[in-house]
Image 1 (cartoon, rainbow, N blue to C red):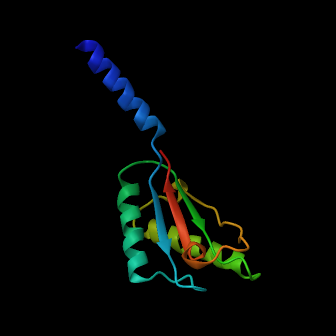
Image 2: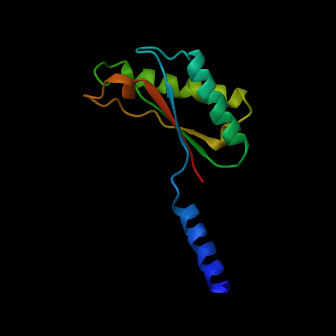
Image 3: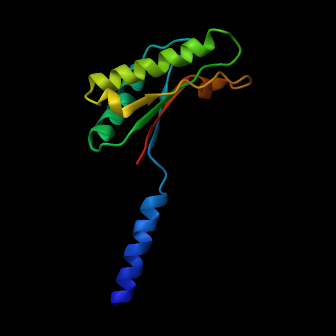
Length: 120
């Protein structure tokens, strides 16, 4: 019985070590960096999850890849999310902003988002 418990504990620890970190997606209107009410609710969920631990947050902005101003839009979207998280009590030192380079051919909702990963 002790071996079963020990093996179960080790398997549980291994599963925790390889678990994917929580990832959140904040969607933006096309060509805009303003948070919608739905996006604000997602940012609030991220802040709640982040305040419960001391993990680092990776914040990556995205935009369409067809126009020169898209890189600036991706950066602005990431900045907006970082500001909102900081206003909600997440320490700036824990957040790393990474605007994604605009990818040609990426269209639709995937090009109008900010991804936030809470690393463990």
